[in-house]
Amino acid sequence: MSSIKESLQKKIESQINAWEKEIESLEVESEKELARSNEKEAEAELKREFADRINALKSNIDQAQGKLSEAQDATESKLEQIMNDIKGWFD
Image 1 (cartoon, rainbow, N blue to C red):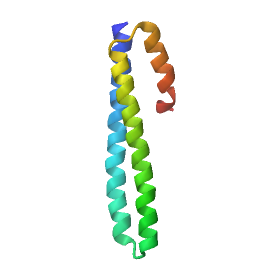
Image 2: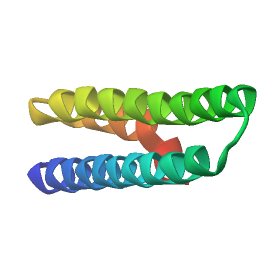
Image 3: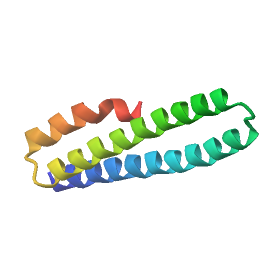
């Protein structure tokens, strides 16, 4: 069971890292787009769009960290439940 647990934990940690990198990339992209924007309305819309995308990723990271905590002391059946819960993250 520990190999399943370790594998699951590594998958979750890897996904968290991928989301964190995506956030960094979005922040850089946001700065570039905002620098090019001349209009206040367009600027506000860009800020909102990037903020929404970044907040969604941060929410995913929070959920993943919760699942990571759950996995640490999980039984085999709980590990299976966690794997089913996070299946969509890797599609």
